[in-house]
Amino acid sequence: MSDRTTPAITPKPRPIPTPVSQPYWDALSVERIVIPRCDACGESFFYARERCPHCLSDEVSWFEVDGGGTLFTFTVATVPTAPMFADEVPQLIAMIDLDEGVRLTATIVDADPADLRVGARVAPVFDHGDDGRTVLRFRLDD
Image (cartoon, rainbow, N blue to C red; front, side, top):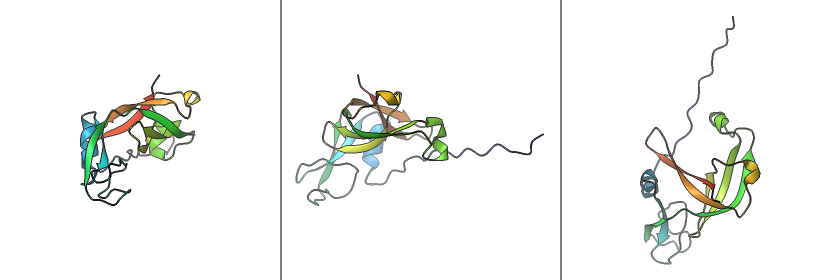
């Protein structure tokens, strides 16, 4: 008989919306994607912030995008980046260039690592968590 105990499973970290990012998370929960755009200079940006990183205006609004884009770069993590991600190995961590001109970091799901290529088309996947929060992921878009 062993005196070993089963280690406790650490839950995966979940996003914690801030007042500035709340529109993004609200949209994801209904399977829409919104990103901020400066009303003063017209530039889009991501991540959400109070001021435009291009001209520093605080005149920022949100607009909807379809989520299509291309794979800018990626890495295949064959060792979990943290213990709670052991069930996702290999982790396909990517930077995505949305067609609307912003770049964001996400994971690729339902893909064989050998099929990933810089420049490949991707489409959004809405990962609804048990906690009511939705995380944006991507899949290869044939």
